[in-house]
Image (cartoon, rainbow over all chains, first blue to last red; front, top):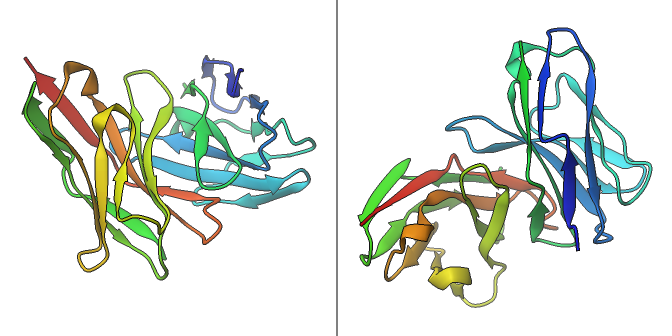
Length: 110
Length: 114
C-alpha cells in the first residue's frame, strides 16, 4: 500500500526554469493538497482539490499552478522558478478530516 | 477565520518526564483539531484528532490531548517522554467545516535528553 507518493525527492532548479512536482495517491481520496514548509513557519497551503476537475487556491498560490485530471494525480507546476520558492513541498490526500502526507520534495532554486 | 497558535517553539524534557506541548485555537464554529508529528527528514504523521466527540482524545504512542472550549486550547501531553519522541509537532485546525483544508501552527520542536 503506497499511500501518497511524491517525485522527485530532491531537485535543484535555476532561476527561471520550470518543473512539475508529481503527486499520486492510491487510496481513492477525493481531496488532495499541496503545502510548502519553510523553517519555523509550519506548513502553508498552496492549492487544493476536492475532486477530479476541481481545484482552488490556498494561502500562497502565487507562482504555482495545479491540475487534477484524475482522482489519483495532483501535479504542481512551477513556471518561472524564483529563489523564494526554495522550500520543502508536501502533497497530501484525505477522504474526510484525516490527511495522509507524502515524504516531501526538497526544492532549491539557485 | 480559523487559526492556531503554538505557544512554544521549542520544548526540552528529560527521558521519562512528562511532555506538554501547548496550542490555542481560534475558530468561528466548533473546530476539528489535530496534532501531527514530523520526524527529521520525514513526512507528517497524524497523532490524534478531535472532531466534537469526547473532549479527551487519545492518540498513538501514548499521546493524548484535551479540548477545552472555555480556554480555546488543545494541549498535547504524554506522561513519560521517550527518546524516540524527539521531533517537530504541529497543531492543526480545519479551515472549513468539511475538514478538507488544514491550517498549521508554526510547530514545536521537542528535544528529549537521556
